[in-house]
Amino acid sequence: MLNKYARAFFTRVLTPFAAFLIRRGVSPDTVTLLGTAGVVAGALVFYPRGEFFWGTVVITLFVFSDLVDGNMARQLGRSSRWGAFLDSTLDRVADSAIFGGLALWYAGGGDDNALCAVSIFCLASGQVVSYTKARGESIGLPVAVNGLVERAERLVISLVAAGFAGLHKFGVPGIQYLLPVALWIVAAGSLVTLIQRVVTVRRESAEADAAAAAQEETAS
View (tube, helix red, strand yellow):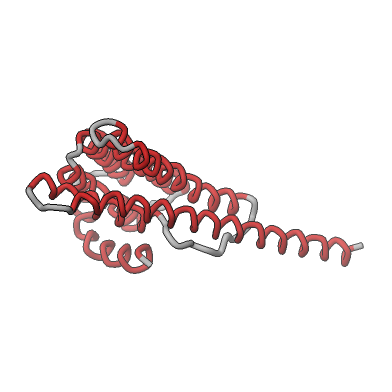
């Protein structure tokens, strides 16, 4: 849902900025690299110290590069396999930094091994969810399912909760509990999504194998 509606909205909003960067001679790949570097820095500098509000502000500013670089490529007519590969690969790096930063906090100053484990599960499950779709498509299957919690949902839930949780340091009472709740939601949603995709790939592969077998029988 977020991919369908929010992405379309922000793409329209960011189109003038993308055009501005093009006029300044900035390439889409440069935006991709700088955006990822900003997300990684925001996550690994602020989150392990428990600075969730400012970390989320920095991360959010750079997360939008994921929309800007694609917008620039379309305006330039340069959409390419390399650009898609680079963008997808660095998305995984950025996601890992976010949940890795949270895990470092709970392993250190946050002093909560259970939430450290949940953060690591969110990190790992996010990578596997993406892999299942990519692997299924690589063997010729459509993988016609998105699932309950995709990357956009994982990021929005986690970043919004982290940002609000950071307000605890500004004197807002009780709000720090939003982040643990969000992490459990993301973990559960990622597990459901993983199961949905595995089940879909199993069904589609069985259908493809049956179709191939039927063609061989017809040919013979």
